[in-house]
Image (cartoon, rainbow, N blue to C red):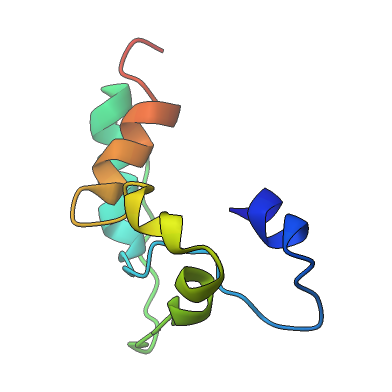
Length: 88
């Protein structure tokens, strides 16, 4: 994605490079735990709920082939499986 944006000469513009799906930290930690077959020590902190919307329209306009990069409902699971395989 970044290589394509640089090749296009994009500069001076904000381009969100993201899947477009926001995952709660708890869900990400659980997915990593599952992939590694280990549990982590968790410390909960009270924080105000926050809604984060990341717009990927500009990214997809500049790099339409991003539609085939595997972003979607299984993105988190596929990403974790790729970088944190259970065989560690």
